[in-house]
Length: 237
Ligand SMILES: C[S@@+](CC[C@H](N)C(=O)[O-])C[C@H]1O[C@@H](n2cnc3c(N)ncnc32)[C@H](O)[C@@H]1O
Image (cartoon, rainbow, N blue to C red; front, top):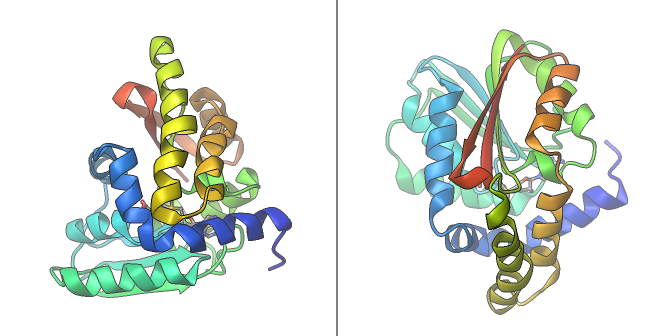
């Protein structure tokens, strides 16, 4: 599919940060990213026999937690548009080497054009990915298309804190502290100037719930974590 300037900008950012992403995620979130992913997987209600698609799978941190809950009768597919992210995910998976679903694949591809037949998956997940996709509606409709009727959608995303008193500290931390730390680790400012801007630009939770509904999902539910800094959205086709 044709990639826009914005797609290429975002792809370039993630290709640059890939080797340091896990470290920076853990440091910047003070370790909370692991807790949020575990909670998100629990809320996804993943079943042993599910056919699961993880969109924006990155280095596979959500993928590995999903796989722990799946059985040999299940299948897992991770998709991301950065090949170097997928390479890291595959290495991590080999190292882990514990129980795995029957079939596992990591595929390079765009969330806006998933390329799978209609009604293919029981569960589609996206963690910390949706706010990076310029056309949210297109991505959500594509996710709905590949879900089987009754299939589940789980989206974990960074969101603005719900506690008003916490917002100034949060902005100071994300706009001032994070880019400085990142500059020394990644040796480039752009990726971590982009991150806080992308969180602020993302929809408030109530609006995102409405958008999920407008894209044809039902039973939309929301679970806010750590003063609203991260939110899990779940829905059904
Ligand atoms: C912050 S990482 C999240 C990775 C992983 N889900 C996790 O829990 O750590 C976001 C990922 O989304 C991917 N991404 C962004 N836009 C995408 C798109 N349009 N199509 C596919 N992948 C995309 C990036 O390459 C990156 O690997």
